[in-house]
Amino acid sequence: MLPVSGLLLAVRGPSSDDELMVLETDAPPPLAVIELGRRVARNVDGSDLDWDGLPASDAAAVALTIRQAWMGDLLTTASSCDAAACGERVDVSFHIAAYLEHHRPEVPGGVSSAREPGWFALDGSEARFRIPTVGDLVTALSGPDSPSALMDACIVPSSLSPAEVEQVDAALAALAPTLDGMVEGVCPRCGATLQLRFDPCSYVLAELRDLFAGIYYEIHLLARSHGWSEHDILVMPWSRRIHYAHLAAADKAAV
Ligand SMILES: [Zn+2]
Image 1: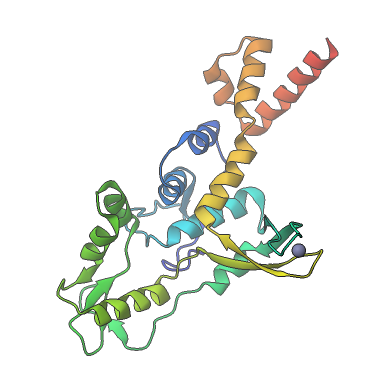
Image 2 (image 1 turned 135 degrees about the vertical axis):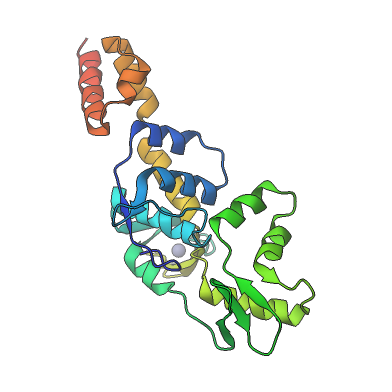
């Protein structure tokens, strides 16, 4: 479940077009994830999602949900031990479901729902605010001054004191917690504790790029060995393409 919107997603398997999109997009990671989500995910009842209205912080949960569907719930991220003269590889494994559960949003004290749907009010202040959406994020990232554009769209009035802005920021962090965070690992060699940064959108895109990296070679191999066009190969189901590519590679090796 996406933590902030509470939506349940149904994710279909990747097509060749999806693989190429993941490999070739140069969009910022959260927007690349949303683009992938628009292609492969729907509400669990089969209806279309309002992607532009989705809380921006749910983009990371979309990444993790797609990853769960395609590669499973258990995730392993790795780093090197930074203790002096150690450098041992440290793997940190955790379950996506547990990670999402750990980052559940909550309504902090001193915050109530405002009259306008989707807006909140800070008690004892004029401040009104709402959770930034994917639509806000797209607009902000395409403009010259993204943090302030995002703030102008989601927090009113503009005359708030720095203390009020700080309170609103803290409230938003509780209502729509970021899934970017630190995960802890222990070095198997020296026992040092390590904090690893985990950014779900970048992490999942990197993993998918590894998973899909073979597509160019497979297209090349099948086009050469069978004379099939790129289009014929791309419309093939993923499992069949891999299977044919293995056969073609075996033929090539036997020559
Ligand atoms: Zn170590």
